[in-house]
Image (cartoon, rainbow, N blue to C red; front, side):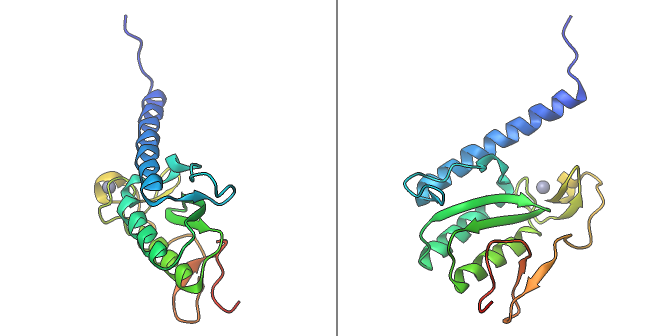
Length: 168
Ligand SMILES: [Zn+2]
């Protein structure tokens, strides 16, 4: 008799498939743009790739292109999803680079993590940004639970980031 697969096992398999897909896509992006590990810049960035939602791939690729054009050294400290939003940590960033990152992080709160369609913050098993199809009836959050720091020029950036607003 075939063994019955539990709901938990099914959801774990689904998550593992998602992690593997994320890892594969972002490994290619790291290679394409020569992104380096901040901890050891002789090596490509390879940590936490499975934690980066695939729906933000285009957003992240565009950010990477803009940062490189702005003179970024291509060193990544960490990229991940936190509180439903993108976190993109780099070692050293000019105020212009910090603003590019802040804008992309803000934009991520409106892009579904799964396939990149327009989304809203949802209270899932943890806070995620999802479109209607992926939210599957989950209650939308009216705003990010993250406190944001306002820059002098009006830009905002999540508190707790390793990037500082200019002139602070
Ligand atoms: Zn979606």
